[in-house]
Each structure stands twice: as C-alpha cells, then as structure tokens.
Image (cartoon, rainbow, N blue to C red; front, side, top):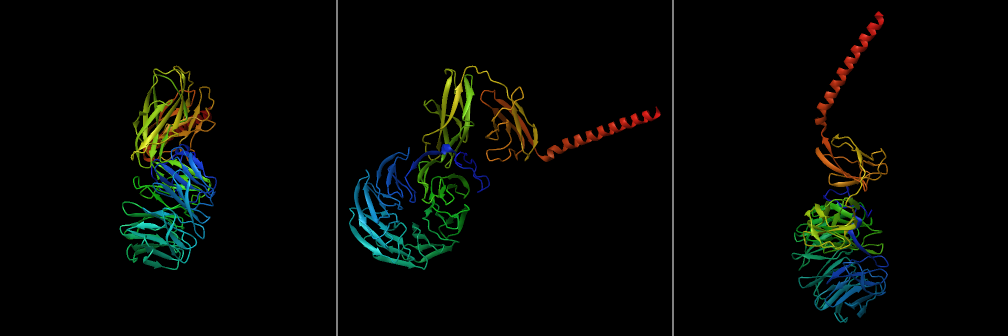
Length: 557
C-alpha cells in the first residue's frame, strides 16, 4: 500500500482514500524491536528508545545512527532532552541520564518499571514510576524529594504556572510545588488517570479511564467543565493557538474540541481502536496520529483525512513532525520518515527528441506548495512554472544522445524544502528517434458519469501493452491488452463534469498522441437521440413501402 500517491484534495474519510506514495518515504530506521515511545528531536538530532533496551541518536535527514546507548531493559518512556543531557526511563526501574555524546552521566534506581516520560525544569527532572512515587531529582542525579501516591504513575508530569501537575492510577490529579513536593490541591475520582495533563489559559486538561475529559482551574483544582466520551481517554493532548484540544479515545475516534467548553469541533473515526496521541502542527493545521490498524493518519484543520501511511504493525507511539517530515515509530520496530511534501511525474521514464522538451508533473504539501524545482544529472536546481500542477521547458539543444535522470523537489508554504531522495524521471534523449504510431480507439462523445474505455493498438492492429493515458490531471496505466478503462484501484475511468477534455497517450518507442474527448450531459444528448429515432422511423417507413410495393408486383405477376 506504500505505492499509491497522495490525495490532492481534502475529501471526506473513506470516500476515496489513497495511501502515501513510496516517494514520500525518505528513510526507514530499524530499532531492533518494537517502538512504543514517541521520538524526541532537539538541536537537529532525533532521540528514540526501543523495547530492545537501546536509546538511539539519529540524523533526521538520512536516518543514520549517530550513536547508540544500551542495552538497558525495555524503553517505553519518551526521552527528555536538555542542552547537555538526555533522560529516559526503562523497565529495569532506572532513570538514565546520558551526555549528548551517548555516554552515561548517571542513573537513578526506583522500585518498579518506569513508563512515565520525564519532564525538565532548569535544574530538576521529574518522572513517575510504577512503584507509585513521583520523583524529583537534581540534574546531578541526587534525589530532591519524592511523593507517594496509591498506585502506579504512567503519564508525563507537567510544569506550568510555577507548579507541577501529575496524575496516578489511584484516580487522583495532583498539583504540587516543584521545589518541595508540597501539595497545593488534589482531585480524586474512582477511575484511574493515565493521560498526561496539558495546560492552556490557566486551565489544566486531563482524560480519565472512565472516558471523562476534565478541565480544571490550574490554581484551585475546581472543575471548569467536563465532557463524557464512550471509552477510555489515555492519550496525551495537543492544543492549537486557537485553543482547540486534540486527542484520541479508545472508542476509535480522534477528536478536536473547543478548550473553552469542551464542545466538539470535529471527530474522525478510523474504524479501529486509536492508540497514539495526536501530534498537532500549529503552522500547517494538520494533525497526525497512529492506530491499531497499522496506519499513520494525516488530518487537515477541518477534520478531513488527507492521507494515511501503512506500517507493518500498530502505531502506538505519537508521531513527530519536524521541518516537513513526519517521524512515526511502529510496533514493527521501524521509525519511518515520511515527507509531507511530494512530487509526482506522469511516468517513470520517457523517450524524448528535439531541442525543447516539456516536462510536467504534480506537487502536494500538507502546508501548501510554494514552488517546485527540477534538475537533471545532479545539476543546478531550476524553478518551474506552476505549483500543484507544474511544467518546465527543458532546453536540450546542447545535449548528446544519452540517458538522463530528471529530479524534482518541492518547498512548502512554511519554507520547508523536501529532502532527498527525490522523485525522478528517467529520460532517454536522442536527436531523432524513429517512433512508431499509436492508434487510439474510443468513443469521442460520451455522457457524463458513464465509464470511458480507450483501446491502444499499433498500426498493424496489435495491442500496445500498458500505455499511459493522461486526462483530468491524472495518469492512468492500461493493461497488457492496451485497454485503459480504470484507475489502479479498479474504479472506472469517468468524468462527472461536462466539456471538451484534451488527453495524451504515451508509450516508450511510440509517438505521443494528443487527442480530445467531449463529455456531455444526458439532456444534451436527447436532441441527437430524437434525431436518430426520427431517422430510424422514416427509414423503417420507406423500407415498409418498398417491401409492400414489391410484394404487390410479385402477386400481379
């Protein structure tokens, strides 16, 4: 499913989903075992933990490891990174602190596994353990204080408004002073808390295992509002500058709700239990999350699914977007780097001749395409005309007959430049190519909504296998019998819009055919149908008279 191209228009979920194309995948890093914790990026380095007990520092541009630490035991805690150190918890009960070169600075032992991700202040690190304690350590690894709850602590503590907020599976949300651990306020209920709290506009938001989303006053713990959902809320939250909360629920939905009162902005169902937290890009307005159907989903600001990418297993860890790349860890053990900027050529290779050769394609970006550039044989990048649909006139007057590699890259409206590897086109150039003719048979006038069928043969009447037909801004590949009648998913080729449409038919070794087809509404066909029927009636009447006269003459004889 990694071979299909992106959707250029934001259309409703399941209406016409298409998976991410292979050119969207920039690299894949294998972490040796399942990835359950979200990656962190700091100063141009990705930090990633794996259940094989290793912590990796990875180059985000090419997926190459910079260093590896371990093995510890399973790492299910997302790293926290300061200017000098990286911190993470492990199933061996230790919180590890590494220098940024991957060497161990210190480690601190608790009495159970650590699933909670650490939070950092200027001089302290805070984290929870399944032993029920919230720990506060100085950055040299010594204990400042610890706070006992009545059950395990799974979520990430939150530092906000000069206070520390954390919850426990004992059903309590705590607000304490970070310097001492003294309690300011506490809210308790029967159901456990597993989601990590988030703060905005003096409100603390957190979800409960009974499906309740709470909004608390940050300073006294009173409930500002609460909303009930059909299943557990265990994900972390993201919040937009417009004060919209994004989260997933175990009912299989991702939600966007207004933080002011909890009313729903949109929700999107994946048909399966949502697993990861939502990563929200406040510059593009896109939300990214993974589910137990093995997919990473990309949803625009209106709640419409734009694309999805299928991995080899569940996507439990929250994805991370950085400079136009979405980094998604999967239970299959891979970290995927998926570009939100994508370029497509109409075909993978072409034969060309002449001194001016037109090259065209399509471009897409979650944040919108700003411009597209092309180059051949690793030469200088050249700007093209157009954005979503672009074209470039290639000056080949000084080229020798040879095979050239044409590459294209995009830059989105946020200034993110698509990294390599780039979409490419193999061009076979010759001054004079003896090309054969294509014969294209089709219905030149067709009713809107009716299936189209194109048959492509050579001059001797033999089918031309797998011709490429470009129409309506898309390229369709025919079958081995030279028939083009559907897209790659088997959907019939048709148009609901009326008008005259130009199209091209290409095949390497053959001259490109430039043709047109007329699409009309049913009402436009009625006069022609009536004319034909009238003609048939008249013809039938004439034949009837002729036969009758003939029979009369035969009787007289």
